[in-house]
Length: 252
Image 1 (cartoon, rainbow, N blue to C red):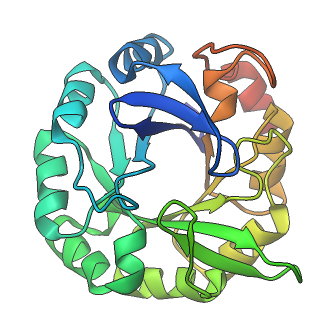
Image 2 (image 1 turned 180 degrees about the vertical axis):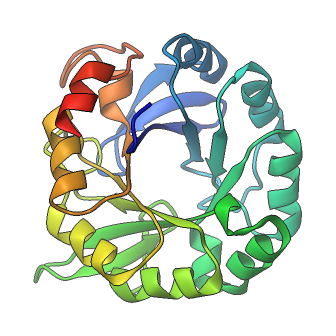
């Protein structure tokens, strides 16, 4: 087993899986349950599902879809999207998910992180931080699917969610997401240098070498993959897959 976790991050839109580019245009990927079955066969260690419209629409998690996913899945599951209360988190955990990712609502109501962590443990709470670069190269935290600029510094917010009780951080570069161009190493490094909890780098992976660089050069504790695990190659059709374990072992 790899010491560095490599996690497929799958995007839910309504009841389908999609893949976005820079949080904008999206491509239909397929049915969530069929995709889970393939990852079961590939013996992936962990899956993360993110509902990309729930917060923007003010909608609670779709428990029916999540229940179907949990019934099919053999590996640990995480979910993010629309979680605005301890009851929402409880409903997701009761279905069979091990972790919840909180993002938009936690920025406005940080106590949600502490409340869930106090009840279920820090290991069950992922603080999801979406980051976009400004005109002058500075970064700011975005919410509501990247639409709302909080004007918060991602490093300061990462330190805050750690203090509040989050067990790990999912750090997503909006500018790199879906581009296959590689991770934003400087942004990831700044966050990993500022916190003690694990940081999952997300947004931009296009090769196994990109994975190696963000782990070795930016100290990411784990990596979340989107395009690489749902497409054949950049610009080519849908193909649910996972990087070769031997190549990952070599690069990591």
